[in-house]
Length: 156
Image (cartoon, rainbow, N blue to C red; front, side):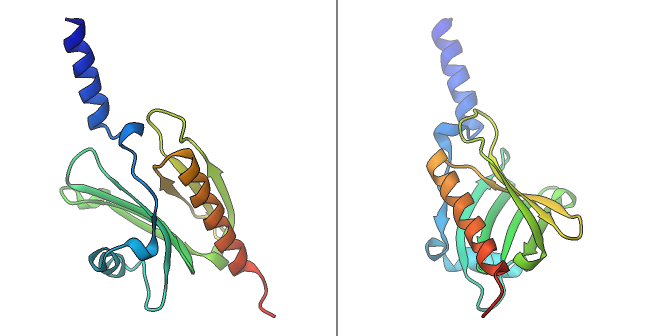
């Protein structure tokens, strides 16, 4: 009985995509042509815009897809539900529109993804999620913040 309970718990936790199954943050250059085309179709990537880092999560159901990333121009996140399109969301902000970035590192927790909370000048807020280990999460946060700060500096 104990063995079957352990196996059941392991299978259930594994199917939730918890830390043992966390993905890794990808450099934009690692994205396939099809992935970049999807971002263009979603209106999240303009001609000449470059993806810096990207993190993708699949939902618990096979019909959901999520992507969170930043480029040389913006921070963006999308959640797409094939079976329930009304629950899908696509959101982004260009760096000049971003007032504040808050990094919430939950990489040590069992069930929550880390995220950058993006606060815009117009009051909009959204999260850019990162489901990776602590080193990759910190790398994502630092690089996104540096990109945002670089874009905010006045041009000489």
